[in-house]
Length: 140
Image (cartoon, rainbow, N blue to C red; front, side, top):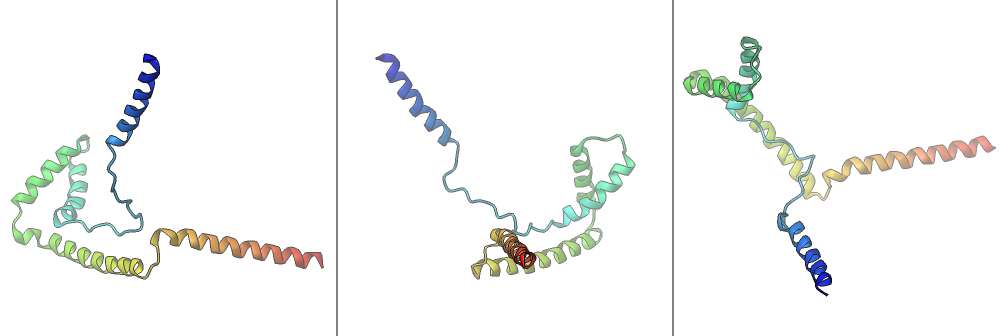
């Protein structure tokens, strides 16, 4: 008797543990959504990383590159940062335009995730129809 109750209780506790860590309302990320633009620091970091790795070829630490970049960024004046800020602003405006297009597609009811699948299915259907018509012509 005791063993049967223990198994039933163990199953119910196992089910609770499986669902315990999961969030119920987590959204699924759309792979077609445009990525956010980099900040001015990350635009600076792209070039700095190359220079730092050329100057220090034996350095394998990502943290060292980040610390050195952060120190240099803090020591730079606003005039030195201006080109990186300008590049970041242009990327930000491009991102705004692409997000607007993306949101319009969503608003029109066009599912961005399904676009690739629907195009493939249309081409597959067309290919099958073409193959079927070719077979009929061969029979004549």
